[in-house]
Image 1 (cartoon, helix red, strand yellow):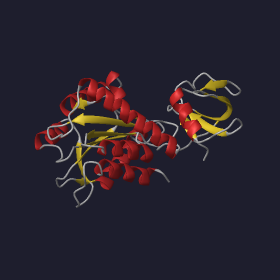
Image 2 (tube, helix red, strand yellow):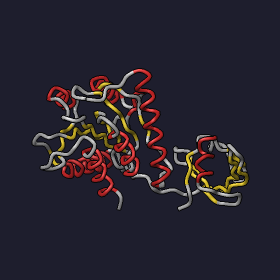
Image 3 (tube, one colour):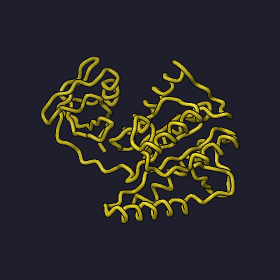
Image 4 (cartoon, one colour):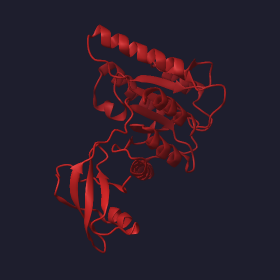
Length: 275
C-alpha cells in the first residue's frame, strides 16, 4: 500500500490538478524522504481517495499532481457509534485508534458519574481535537478513506436526552451525534443480560421483517453501543438508558476493561458483517 495522507481540500479537484499540502502534512512526506515522481495516496476523510504524484519538494511545502480516484471498499457495511465513558490517562487514545481500525463511524466521549477523566470548556475542545488527530493517523495507517468523527464531550445524561429526542423525532440536528434514529442501541452491561451475538441476530431479523413489511430493500441496521468508564456505569445511569429503550447486552462471563469492552463489541460486528 502506498503512503497515505489525509488532506482536507481534496473535494472539487480533478485529475491533473495540483495540490499544495499543508506544512504539517508536507513534513510527514519529507520525513519519508520522498522525491519528485514518487507516488502516494491522498484522501479527504469523507470517502474520496486519489492517487497522486509528488511534483515539487519545497522547504516547508510539498506539491502533488492528482491522479485518478481510488475505489476504496474498507468500510463496515453497517454504521457503528461507540459512546464511551472516557477512560483516564492515554487509554482514550487507544480506544480512538483501535475503533478507527475496526471500522467505527462515530465516537462519542462521555462524562459519567464514575468518570476519573472530567473535561469541559477549552480543555475538552483541545482533547477532542487531539483525538480527531489520532483517528486521522489511524485511518492513514489502516487504509480507510472515511475518518470517524469524534464528537464534543457531553455528560451521559445530556447525551441520552438528545438520543431520546432523536428516537422520537427521526432525523434531526441530533443525528450528527449518532448513526440515526433507526439504529439499534445497546448498553454493554455486567448484569445477566442478552448475549451480544443473540441480540445482533434479533436486530438483523427485525431489520429483515421491517424491510419486508415496507416492500423495500433491506439495509443493515446501524448500531450504537454505550459503555461506562472505569468502574462502569452506575446503576442509576444504566437504568436511565434502559428506560429510554436501550437493551442491556453481555460480552460474556469475564469482566472487560473500559477500553476493551467497546472494541470487543465492534470486533463482533465486523466478524458478523464482513464476509
